[in-house]
Length: 231
Image (tube, rainbow, N blue to C red; front, top):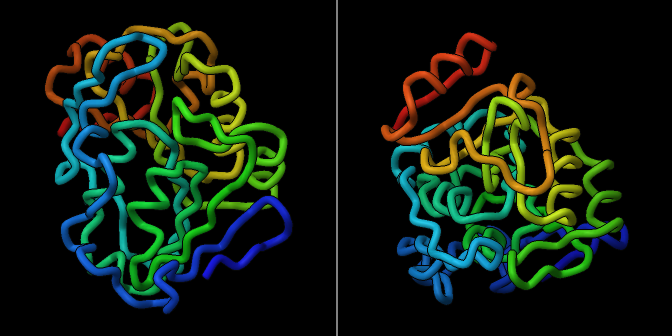
C-alpha cells in the first residue's frame, strides 16, 4: 500500500500489501537490472562508474539505534550502501529511510521494519531520482540524523559537486535536513569537480572512500576537521 502524506511525500508501508512482511527473495536484494547498477553507465561522463567502495565495508555506518532517520541520496555508491544494510537493521522496526531515489525504494521499500518516505517530484530518468520544487519542498519539512551523499566529485576548492543542476538542488535540501553529512566517494573522484557545488568540503562531517584515496588529500581533509574512513 502506498499511503500519501501531503501531496509530495509517499510513505511506503509494505508494497506487497502487508506492512512489516519481508518480500520474497529480499535476502538476495533482488532488483531489476541491479547488477548493472554496480557498474552503471554515467549519462554525463559517458563511461561506466566502477565502484571502489564495497557495500560490506560501508554498511556498518548505518546503525540500529532508536528511531534512526537516514537520508539516502541517489547514485551508484549510495545504492551499494542500500544493498549492504544488514537484515537485522532492516527488520528491527526503528529505521526511517528518506530518499528521492527510485532504485533505493525498490531495494529497501518492502523490508519489514523500514519506514520509507519516498520524496516525490519531477522524475529524472537518467538518474532515477525525483527533483524539482516539490522534492525540495518535501525535504524542507523533514529532519534526519544522517545523510549519505554521493557525488560526481570532491575537491578542496569546490567541495562536493555533481554534474546535474537539478540534482544539486535536491542534494542541498537533503544536506539542510540532516544533522550529519556523510559523503560516499570512490577514490577516483577525489580531487575532481562536477558542474555544480553542493557543499563546501569543510562542512561535511565524514568521508567514506577506498584505499586508493591520495594520502595528501586525506591528510588535508582531516586537518580541516573532516573524519575520513578508508574502507
